[in-house]
Length: 277
Image (cartoon, rainbow, N blue to C red):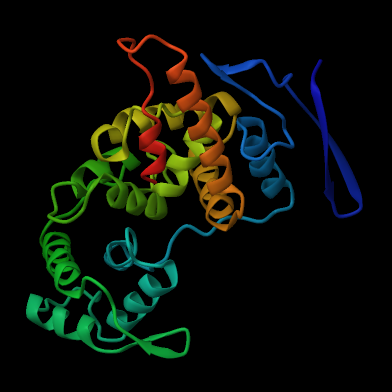
């Protein structure tokens, strides 16, 4: 039997059918309950719902590639989204992203200043490190022309810049080109992959980024949705969900229970990986 669900769009109700929940969407990965956050079927439904409600996702943060690179470098790991945005606007007001060269020491000085964050002065973390990375990126972009034909080409070009890793490079490429051939594998997407079981807990973003990316892109293709939409919808819902940690704990307990039911010398998934996130 298929799963029936409905989406209200204005005065119209649209009926949708999804495969039965135990049907595999990928080898070893089932569609799951369409109403069961966070199953693959649930994610497909949410992406399609957003499309039908005509709620387009705004990816770009800047008006130029220089601005986009700056916004993504200043955000990311360890930096709340609102603080990264505030630091970006602060440097933008200093004309940092106009193409005019600035010394690394000057960038550091500006990032060390109190920054208006949600109406209050705040200190930006990692100002020295981010000033170094931003300087390298701006110097590279001001002297060389990156390839823009595909997301992967731009992502791989950006990886040669000091301080830009796979996640940040993919973030820039996805935003600037609305690319569907890369994935932004941050903590929220990784958790979604573990819970929906299209990521193996034995793989980590730090060591297996591109392998995990292929799994994510394969899922998007199998669901019939774009990778960029799926990434954005997952990120938004995972970071705002109050049940993620409870679900991860439940998964960890299940993996632990399964591992103790096997012989000690059999290789089992590593539930401690889940605990680290």
